[in-house]
Image (cartoon, rainbow, N blue to C red):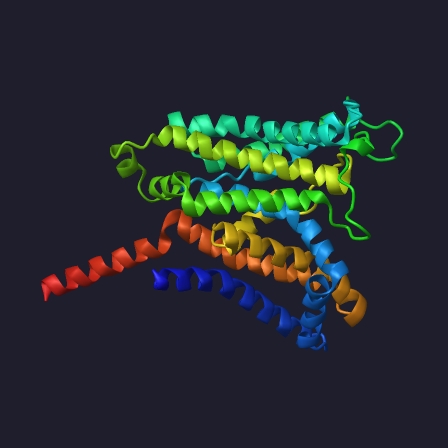
Amino acid sequence: MKRIKWKNLANSVLPVFFALLIGAVIMLAMGHNPLNAYRIMFERPLFTLRGLTNTLHIAGPLLLAGLAIAVTFRSNLYNMGVEGQLIFGGFLAGLAGAYLHIPNPFLHKFVCLVVGIIAGMMFVLIPAILRAFLRVDEMVVTLTLNYVMMTVLEYLSSGPFRNQGAGYVSTNTIDKTAMFNRIGKTRLTPFFIIAFLVFLLFFFMHKRMVFGYRGEAVGKNPEFAEATGLRVRRHIVQVMIISGALAGLAGAGHMMSHEFNYTLSFSGTPGIGWDGMLISLLGGHSPAGVLIAAVFYSALKTGSDNINMYTGIPKEIVAIIQGLIVLFLSIRFINDRFGLTKRWRNKRNMKGTVHGTFE
């Protein structure tokens, strides 16, 4: 057990270490001190009140997106459509916030969040049913549906629901009763508290409830789980719907606490859903790991401006580091998905057995 934990820790830490190491080499080649740069990059976003609250504000949707990925990965499912579910949830939550004029702020926020959650659940239901009952590869379906959703929302936001008073493609701004207000003079809003409460719920489910053990059983051996009485098909649909709900909640929260209207750059580049995949891989698909990875990745994002302002190093260096982390984690993801290391070891063992037999 301890060996597995250390292995999981190494799988999460080493990609970050090598990415930072290569980033340091690039900084040295540019004539800058990488230790000073990294100190500034992480000190301000994590060890100052203003920086930390800004980091946590950005981390809220990232945490939910990471959990949306992690909950499926643990059951050996691959919901690659978190980005599409997230922007769909954000879009419909934005419409509810702009067109439903509810005087009660608490009720208006609640309705918008529920609309976002339902949107994510509805969108993931198609690949969930296809995977559970027809064994269609959910990775391909969810990945493809992302681009379908992006195209549909581009049409809706630039046509039927466009804000005619804006000089760019945008929907109407949500009412103030639907906005999450900032806490004090910081950028942090109550939505982070909601995201953190969801994290606590999933941590409890993962550690103490049958749902967590069932997910691991289905992920490791679905045929054996079916034989022991677990309803694997129903579990697949449940897990995918929960993932879609988390993605829709992340989109709704991002709309109500940060964006306030839908634009073509609503989720950013590469997108909160795609960042969630990196965060889940970095956190080893465990709730606690996802929380740490979300805060770390958010600090990277917020620290890019600091490194440019105080050291003169272009902030694109942070994008390079993020890209390197993605590259190293992608190698691990491909290996986990297709079992390349296991296949190589089996072939090696077979060759050794055959060689020993002929001897």
